[in-house]
Image 1 (spheres, protein in one colour):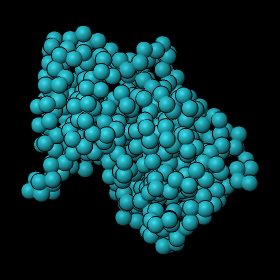
Image 2 (cartoon, rainbow, N blue to C red; image 1 turned 45 degrees about the vertical axis):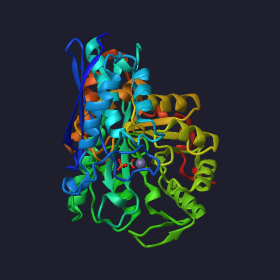
Image 3 (cartoon, rainbow, N blue to C red; image 1 turned 180 degrees about the vertical axis):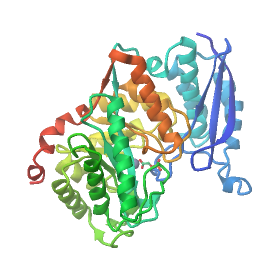
Image 4 (tube, protein in one colour; image 1 turned 90 degrees about the horizontal axis):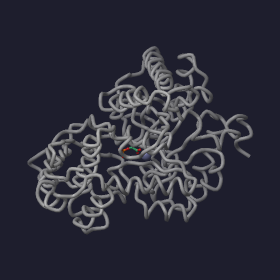
Length: 440
Ligand code: PGA
Ligand code: ZN
């Protein structure tokens, strides 16, 4: 394998018009590959540090020139001559060069650019697609997508407290068919919103952000759209939620400050979700239903709902192997959200997925609300076979790029591809069917 010869970093823009890095890795035989780094908005408190220049004269302080200089300076000197196929050694070198527990010195954005860029270069050099470079297998699982079609919370200027309302084509026979049914539902939702006089302008992740009256109305509209598109909610298409509850948790209480200003204790919040699951058995997955700082709330919801629905931890685990192990020990959640830039290296990301598998936790590969046209997460989802990906709605090029990449991979794999469909949720299947049985 040709060794790493050169690192170049360019300050580019993400889908929100904020600076981010494109890192190009050149190998000794001339092979070149580029990785582009995403950026979150509703970030977990313990995510690895995203290094910004802080120079208010440029991009309001959000420039990444320092991070770019680190890539081309000390990081290049540290990894030059290394084998790009030895991802673990490369990432270990980057982490020790940084020397902090949260990548505060060099920035997780700079480190991820190099880590992922090297993986992409190694794949090209080996003449295999990225997913096949990351794992060698004879069969691959195509992920069931979660499309965030209605937005609220801090991502939208409406009366909806919860951040993401997603649709997921769990009943389709293939990724291609699943994506089509979800996209048809997205279009049905658009005409429904239009007919009811709501705005169909889209938010950061390509979902609609209408001025809805309540949190319930979002679910009702999605269910209506699924019917309108000719599908059965909870059979063909399931509903998945990410309330991003850390955003409305304050001082021991959950405050619905966007809708009715009601205040809920953690116990009331759990009762709220139970009520929703009784009324809407089409909901199969709940991410960050509880705030990252409410540990006992997380333990309680896991105890009460963990055997009935997928409970995904995002802000509490932040794709950090140590925090994830701690959470498993404390019996919180039963699945983890995976975002490469929350931790900053490919190796630590893969480690989290391995921990999930060892402990019977699910895993959902995820984009960030600030994205680029980089499609590596599509390959990561296929390579790891976790069976789930959330990468936005059926609009905005940076979201569509990932779905298109998955279509390509499915075609390339042919008979070697299997669509995850409802399998990631199989263990809860019994409890999805009769709505009344769901809540005791
Ligand atoms: P973020 O949000 O990328 O803005 O952090 C996505 C999420 O909360 O899952
Ligand atoms: Zn989330």
